[in-house]
Length: 413
Image (cartoon, rainbow, N blue to C red; front, side, top):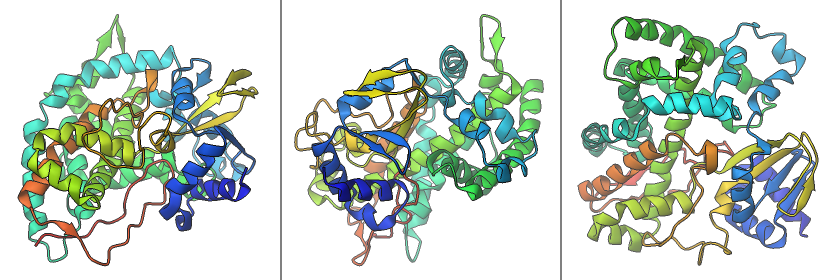
């Protein structure tokens, strides 16, 4: 096997921007030559193929409980400087994505009772109105930037309205969201990331608790009130569980949707034939969003942990081993997707796994899809001549888990 490609893959996963521009060539080389890679540098098994990723996502013998164990193994310089009652330490094992069944099933059932498909669909008029307002404002900018002007504020405004937070908190919500996304998506030995997240957790707790108390006294028609009221067979979410999973919705939801919107417009603008096809046939919006999710997956990586020895993906993997599933690579597997490096918004039977699969399938996927399905047709209708700035070179955010552009300057004339 070409060890240079393994080294490049490791560098990519450790945030080396030099290799970001050729990530899919790296993916393809690794995927072609080996379905599973063990990285000594990362101390992880890396699954590269679609079928193996699907198997792992559904395998009940693999654990999602990585975050609590990571926190237990914090270096002394971090743990000694964190208050034992810091919400990050206390609430880490309350997040549904970091729990296995039966705890995960219990948390997800309760959150699902509040975060319903009907509640999400009811946001469509709000999303359309906010999108039109943001596009109008972007049209007035001397140097419009789709990421700054639309892709960042829209998801924050939508989730704030859904939860019931005032718009004057949007800047703070963005900071908390970024801290959470970095914590979930960057290498876990980054001390600065831990302290930033610990501070954000304290600030968010101080912010949200009065809102919880207010909703208990006077419920409203928002997600916060619905989460407080959610009950199953006499079981309800504790306050720590409420706060932890509201934070999860903010951090993962905002980051993923911002990246989906930015990756989507960038991909359309770099494939003018597909952009024109969507302009002529706006009914392809749903299919276009699915192809964007496959082609430039906003969530590139997810992880699992072995609780016992097992045979999976043609490998015997020991107990207490970490597994990294490369969703972005799996979504370009030529064994599953015909001509996988071709962007085609009419692609049929698009069974990508950009939002995961199985019990931990992304809870916010319907909301992210809805926002993208609304905004992409609106922007190409509002600005029929939109195109990339002539000297634009994409710079991707330094987060190996969440793939997203830092900026997307556009010419609207």
